[in-house]
Amino acid sequence: MALNDYLGCIVGGIPHGGTTFMSSLIKNLDGFCGSGTGNNSGFEYGLLFNQTPKTQNTNPFPMYRRYPDERWGVDVKDREYILNSNSFEETYKRTIEKSSTLEEGKLIVDKAPHYVIRVEDIIAKAKGVPFIVTRRDIRNAYMSYTKKIRSLNQFFIQGNNLYTEQADERLEKLDKEGKICLISHERLLLKDEKEIEKLELYLGKKLPESFYNGDMIYGHQGKMNVDRAISGYTKITEEQIDAIKKHFPLYNKFLYAEGIDG
Image 1 (cartoon, rainbow, N blue to C red):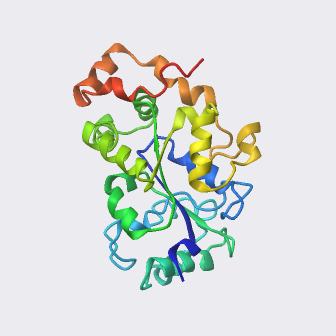
Image 2 (cartoon, helix red, strand yellow):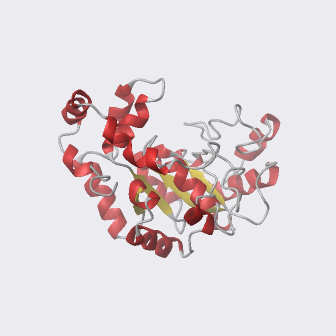
C-alpha cells in the first residue's frame, strides 16, 4: 500500500491565493474523487501537518462539522477510527472507506493553504505525490482578504510564506527541481498556454473540457467569476498599496497580474 494509491495531489498556497480553484480543477480530472463535479469530494484536510495520523497537532477536516455532506461526508463517530491508524496511507484509505461522498478506487486531493509553510516537510512525507503551490498577485490576494471579516494582519502573516525574498527563492528552487509545481492563479484563469502546459506536464493529464468552456464547478461557490478574480487589484487604493509595501519591500516582484488582464 503506497500513499499515492489514495492521495492523488496536494495543493498549498495562502488563503485567498487560488487554492480552492486549483483543488476543484484537479478534482475534475479523471481518476480523482469528485471527477466531473469538483465539489462533492472534500474541501480542506491538512492531515500531513501532523508527524503521524495520531499526533493531532492540527485538526484535519477543519470544516467537516459545518459541511459534512458537501465536504468529506465523515460522521463524528467515524472520525476516531479514521485518525487512529498507523500510517498516512491507512488514514487516507479509511477516509475514502467511511466517507459518504468519496468514491472507492479514486484519489483524494488534500488541499490546505498552509502546507506552503512547511513545504519541505510535506514533500518528504508525500514522496511521489504531486504538490501544486498556487501564487496570486499580491494585490488580488490582499483585496480578497478585505471581503472577509478577518484581521488584515493575518494577510501580512500569511503573505510571509509567498511574498518575501526568502520564501520566493525557496519555492522557485523547489519548482525547478520538480518537487513542486508553482502555478500563477491569474495566468491559469486566463488560459495562458505556457501555464496550462506546465500544469499538464507535471500532472501527466490534460485539463478537463469544463475548464475551457466555463462549466467547471468551483468548490462550493458555483462557477468562477474570472474577471473579478483577476482584476480585483484595480480597486486597490494607494493607501492600501503603501500598507502592503511596508510589510513586503519586494512588492513589485509579486504583481503577477500585471499586463495580463487585457
